[in-house]
Length: 500
Image (cartoon, one colour):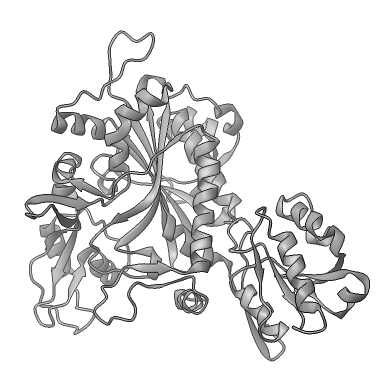
């Protein structure tokens, strides 16, 4: 299975597709989500909000996508948010040089290398242009990925589309801390889009220019990094840690990760555990999960400690969450640039201090693509090839579909009555009466709907319907009067299909 299969299915079933696709001039790296994809995307956010925001008692904000230049002077984006690029002098193609060199070398090359170091690698490995095969390159340069916008009638007020969702969280910290009336550690969350002028958008939702993100910044007193409510609940839970020293995945309990100083403290271990648990609950097998420890040279300039949460896919290991211990770099920088005191004083503390931050920055669109990749199934059923998505019911666009076998003899009307009864806001229900029953099954299988209800002629005789299970194709008869209760128990995970 290749990523092309996912893209093909996504476009056929209105999951995602290129933005402004009817125009040939539309730039790459921007995507629209159809009704099916938007439902999946929304459910991922809703589950993230429930599991990692509401259960933790965190605050959620919605910040502006446009911020003034001074914000990004303080954050370092105008100086440091740049990718290394190289121009082929023969065909004028532009490449991310780390990707180009990695392809030639056969192993990953850190993007943090200096332009001079990249120039030397290009010569050493006799790197060729992937388009024209020339080895004539211009000197490597840094390309800033910020998207500038002009604000106001004169166009003189320079602002930028945010390249990440966290900056407005840092800017709003003082107000939220004061108005929320909560003590540290305080988590502030935000789900929304950010913008990066990627040199070479690729792999569909994996590298976009408009990026869906789910961000959590946990503000805490560094002296109390080991004072975290809830740690007892996860102390024996094992994290899949890919350690620098061993270069392999090791299953290490949260308690051991702290005692052996693999992580900086209990607060870090706790939130790594909650992140891993979240994606397990979305149906990602634990053997396909790892937290990759980043060496100092590969970390962002603000990061004291970094664990990249990655999932193994058909594209290899894909990063879904950047877990960064950002220390007090962000608040200190904004405090200096804005000349606003962002320090706080906790009860019992003699001196005010600037809180430290642990970041959990998740890619929403990446998560959707990875879940589609892992759920994609293609199997032979006799002469026919069947395609379906083995999605967890939590993120399937609909929990159940309702199909009258035909549109006559009262079956359509009975189907509509059952649809109305089920479609009461507890779970999403899809109704379709068009085409053969086989084609209707195939359509909902391709978008991952777990169950299908068929109203047939026996329904008119004994008031029973058929429930069909997506993966096994098994079918069972259920009384209409018991249908909602049966579906609700399965929706809540209190009963399996086999127990019907």
